[in-house]
Length: 455
Image 1 (spheres, rainbow, N blue to C red):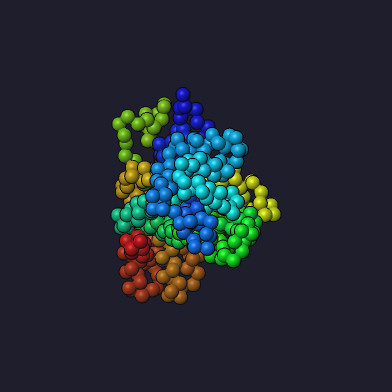
Image 2: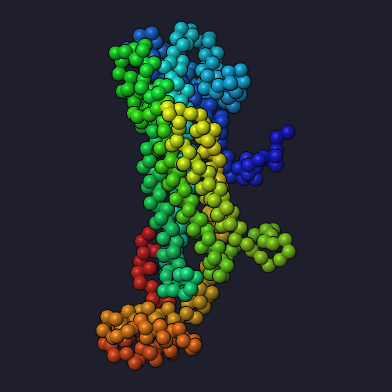
């Protein structure tokens, strides 16, 4: 009996339920289904073309039968294809044989059965199948999940836009920011990658064994096969790549994977920052009654969602990096090293999807600890050394940086009184002095609130 407990990959084991919506696209079933679809649509287009007289236009009834095979291709059908593959030891040829056998009772198809897979090399079928799988999987699952994350972050940016927070550069106290502005930063970064992903071309080729339509022209030398191929590829929602060897070189896939890698790297950055903010008690986490944080320390509520997300993003990026580096490489006109690698696209995107869901889960559990955030601001008056020395510069006072450095790096604790006493000694215009006296760590925010509110 098959059990998720026996799975080698967590994608098919522990996290199986979280990636179920990817299976129709990136499973072997999804690959076989798309191969069948490409073979059928190619045959129909051959029949619709007046120049290929050997393939008469199919009747409405036959087209409906072919369409039903595409629409209702089942797991049982895929298993039948795999059974044929045991004999052929060739996965695409098994699809061709299965189609011929499945349609043997249709006299129209039987008369032209040798035009199934006509002039095609296996890679004509495979590259279009993988392109469709990737396009549909990205558009229906991965990109919507990324958009959900971006939306969550932009909502939090606006919600927390007016909450001042001590920033830290190099781990040290730094000029304040707005809590919402920090969420806006991440939202903006992800938005740029969403644009790249949603405007990405998905390429395909249908040009034979070495990309020159050699077989096509041997049978029909007067036909414009290049344009015919273009029409076919565009009819299934892809864009023609005119210059290929036996394989479509996968450059567009690399572009997609690099965009996903960038999204994932941005989210690793976010997960680590949120982990730190939780560690510093800037956020608390909603608790679940029966959830256990530590097997020995009952008080703990660990930031496990962000840790899980970070770990799975790392796995995803490792796989996506290999896909990106390997897939564009092929010896001469073809080698088979891409074949086994392509089968792992779903695994790489599966780890990404698990990570996205974990991050979203964590984001929905955090609550702002305003008291702790204010306490840290109140204890960091030294951060106002920056505006004080900047106003001094404006007014021509010599060595302002050095004077503030001497003041704030001394042995005394910097507080409001120390700074006000210093400001009172400055020979600067009254309005500048009033501005500095009224300035606090909570109000020294620049346009952080505006930026966060308008993400």
